[in-house]
Image 1 (cartoon, rainbow, N blue to C red):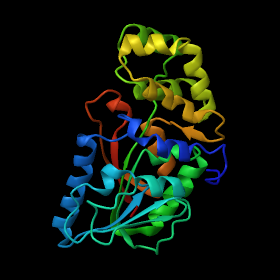
Image 2 (cartoon, rainbow, N blue to C red):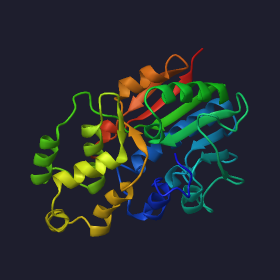
Image 3 (cartoon, helix red, strand yellow):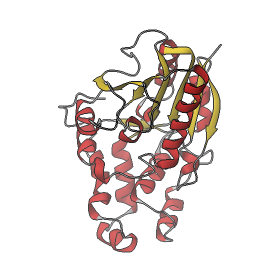
Length: 278
């Protein structure tokens, strides 16, 4: 990611527009409940609250019902995101957020019981950065630690823009955010890394009249306009399939289980749990 004062970095704009971002780009109650259940199970098995590393500053994860005594540290490279989104209430006592890199975490070896994140892998380059990420998480996780991530994963069979356009015309896409992710996954190259400006370009090709889209769908103008956060950005997202993610994180991390929620695009947004390789 570019520095926060670089106009080509869209994260400061994204932080300011956070209230207009919705599922599947943000987790819902089902996603949060999965993480809460894992934390409760870990606590019950070990007789103490976990040491938690939050990758990013997703408010829904920071404020979930963590077991009493949980130690939580959030790491994000964007000062704008930390300042705008990390909650000041509803978090475990002593919780804090700090700037840092996920590929070089400011955490000691074996110091994390649970590492959690929402869509964070899509901010990394596939597949080299995924492998570096796996090695770094394997370093900081305790021997019995767990990594819990909600993925943004491409479907095994890619969609075409024509198919997405037909679904949009038929009223089969329920939100602007679902449309955005379907476009992103459709236009990404075979190497799975897509420039965010290309996502916006695909939207503009598909939607020539935003007012008509708003009238037909009921989507607010300012929500549709969140696509403009990508204008001029130099950032790149990645959307491998869930199986490709598992392969990229191996052998450092081993999948324990995967859960796909029932909401729109839930099959592309599974919560996955990994353990350190033995």
